[in-house]
Image 1 (cartoon, rainbow, N blue to C red):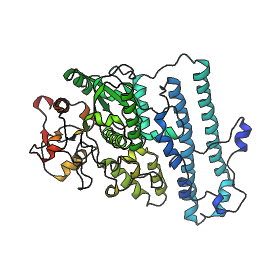
Image 2: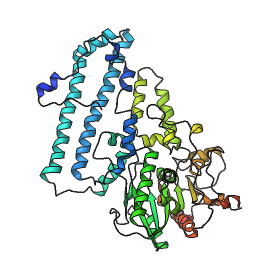
Image 3: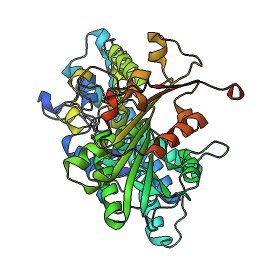
Image 4: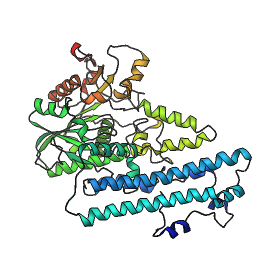
Length: 485
């Protein structure tokens, strides 16, 4: 968002209402609706902001308090109104002037001087004035008035914050919004990990718009508890992170978090990673960047398990991108297609399962390379990798529709890492499992999935993890039992 001039009084408000430029220079005038939309920093991220995302987790962890929550909402409400006002004004102007053949610089200048243009400018500046004052007031209250009485967020609001991070997490970081979540490891009691660690550590990594609390829902079977009960010599930790960031940025941060954990607890002998949905991609990205940077924790990873991870993209994001592209071709309504770019960079990365910086850094705007031009990211040879897919149907049908439908969000082929020869993940068939009668979200709660994950981790085979790709083991098919129906 453009930084507003300081406004102290109501006179300043009307004095700074946007007016037309005095020059005739075309570059100084933002008249065309498409140029107007392209220049909104709220929608697009430049190279500098991408660096901010990369370095976000190098800062000390700061918990989000209740005051932070309301301050962040005030900022979002203000910025949302301001930016949407820009879009609405651009559409309004085009709809009125273009059919009359008056969509030219002269008439656009008169629009800015007219009452309608001044009303839009007043709305923008009024919201900036009100919103900034609310945010500053809440910040002063938090830092000065009640410095020792920080009220933590209840669980329901913490889940809401993670949803907001999934939808617009990169935006929250770029605008220093206090709602931006820091990457942190939690223990089984939902407290930040602080105790001593040794032996085998299992890290669970959640998916888009979820949080570390998503693994522990009341009334549901919890994978973490199952692992602790079946593998009492292991410690289970839960990663919490901003799912709206670039997956590769989260991967770099996760690699640093794991290295810091090992440096602080050198008695850790093995690390296992379990990722659901986006969490599996973040784990793969962490392995890639951890190896690239020579981090020692990578050599201690024994197993990687991904649950419904879109290794080659999620159908829903590709469909959304296609619809947005088609809308952009329509007169007038095409301007609304730009609203689709408000979704986070993390969601955009899910289009083709992009987990490396090279898949997006060379591009303008907030896009990713097409599936065929992605940079292959092979799995470490020493890690036992297991891939889980789900299908909502309850019986096994060998047809394209069933595979594409998958668990409702991710196709079976994508979850099993199957694509062209260059991009297919080299995983033995016996390390792949398809669970029928399970949807995408239930993968983390389903008892059949839990039993299979525990069985794989208990095997804990050493040596070359990919020797079995030449074996005769077939992939695993799991069907609902009668008492599940």
